[in-house]
Image: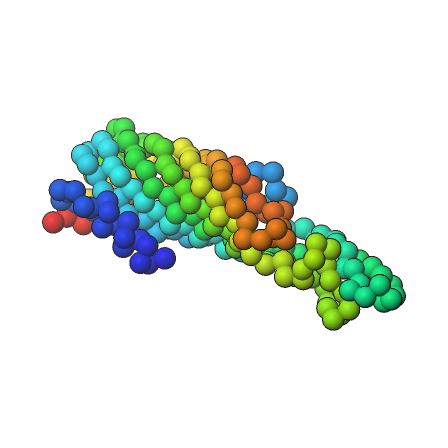
Amino acid sequence: MKKLLVIIAVWLSSGAFAQVSFSAGGSSLLAFGTEAGPWGGVHLGVEVPRDDAISLYGRITHNFAKKGDSVQTIAMAIDFMTSPYTLPVNGVTSSTYSIVEGGTRYYLGNGFDFGWAGYGGTNFMLVFNRVRTSYDDFDQTLYQLEGGSNDRDGSIISFGIGLHGGVKYSVPRIGTFYTDINLGYMFLGQASNINVSAELYSPLIFGINLGYRYDILW
């Protein structure tokens, strides 16, 4: 993750810019259509102003694993002679949300460097969901979960586009404090295998971020 942030910083600052800003803070994410409540997480970011009204930014957000509701599936006997032939098995799915995003910000008010200002813009997202499903113990030498595999761990990778907006306050010689929101729509989602649970996955996500930005001049 740190290497990726460095790559983003180099890419953003590849032009003739004389300032770069680094940011960090806490995050929360809501996946619409799922039964789970908000995910909690952290973020790191880099931002390069083109002038006092426009900047390019990149950010990496990791939202920690959250469990969904208990689910039930069926384990089927490998041998037709096994009795009972089917067993009900309870399980719980958990998922993380890791997001790499980048885009353009437009500032209104006092601008990028001074005082109060609002900002907003569009972004592109790469979203990585790490999914794990834990089931109650059963004899895996005799039974196999419905679907043909006892391995239900995997990942879902999606690309998306979004809108973001927020407000910031810059304090001379101290830094900038900010809060913003993201609304993203995912498409081209691809699971690593057909048995990965999509219970906690949503193509529509909403995020809230609160953090601190430090500006470096050269």
